[in-house]
Image 1: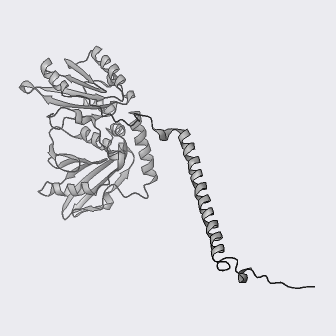
Image 2 (image 1 turned 90 degrees about the vertical axis):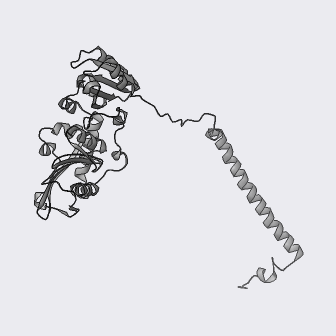
Image 3 (image 1 turned 180 degrees about the horizontal axis):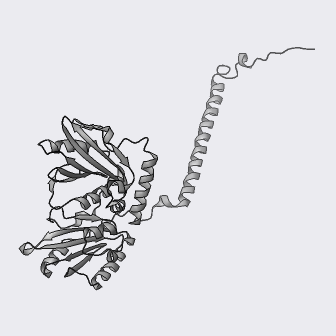
Length: 350
């Protein structure tokens, strides 16, 4: 958590310093929709875009925001756009705000809608669009908006890998990605922040699953920076008395998987066993002695090169001198030491 807060703070400072050179967060137009300049508002205070969850936005690496209305003919779209330090923040904030009753849409990197409200994110930007009414072109209009948004590059565009470890077929829009205790508490995680210990900079992903007879159970996945941290935390969780049980735990590498709710042991372990940590090991260390790494060989090579240069110089010198001597003997006074070349002008000054 500390690392993400530092990244968010640094991004905010850089964004503020470069605001004069950077293009605006929202485009001037998209798909015929024109920005109403008098409605445009921007800022770097999270409380002005969401006074209730400002602290949550900061946990995700909040940087700045823009709100504006777009008009086309007699229609209006209200747009709220929030930029985060990286794509992880955009993804996390989307998972925080999305509601289970929303329908999945194909806009940006991920989207969901509920009648005239459409929520989506692209890169590190989260967009909340309020339509005056929905039409057959609403989706294509918002896809054009998503394409016009600024996107991060390099490492800032990389999404977290933790969600990929979740078992498939979770309840739609129930997955939540969390990096701080405030969001965890407000989302109602079955595992409290005190046991997760965000001072260790973990990432948390939890979702709901349906088991026999339509019962919903909670599945929580936590990733720690090291195996040791994960081993220590699972011991603390197993020894704690938690409401909402029974609880089932499993650790694989730095990952902790927790299942709780109205589920029997067999179904719980089916979910737990679907999570495993597979480390990718890359060997980049030499497996045998490399003569080029010996400093003695380097020095010997340098002296050998010097000797070669001296030898070449000696050969060229002997060749040049030998040709000159041979030419003087074979063709005297023709090429070298000709009388006209050695005449001396004398001034007999007395």
